[in-house]
Length: 174
Image (cartoon, rainbow, N blue to C red; front, side, top):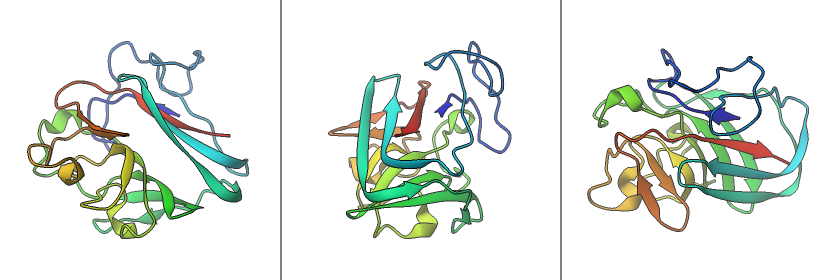
């Protein structure tokens, strides 16, 4: 799955030059695309940042099967959680509405690996808990002063804030 958005997920518009879901296009940073993973068996998950470029990956402690199960985060938005084992989850979806975030027109749909101990309702807003990948717009606490409400936070070995810069990113299972 690759995401490139200019507005929030509930009313989002696609970035100019990004091919929309459902339109035939080769995978890459100029296409927004995805497939239904329901029933797919996998062991490895990778989150890609095509803008940086960079990626982070985790291997599950046992084979998993993707399912359609979602849950409501603390603020009522839909989230997805896949427990990978070894203390890590794959999560996707908003914790909050983005209120207080810089440049609301460019809020992202977060996709992250986070510590399983991170409260489930927080999705990818992690405070001091572990985070790798693209964090929620209010997840900047993990990056220190100046990144709080930085809107787009990518974390691998270091933190990158995109502020008003578009980020193109996604995830894959194998």
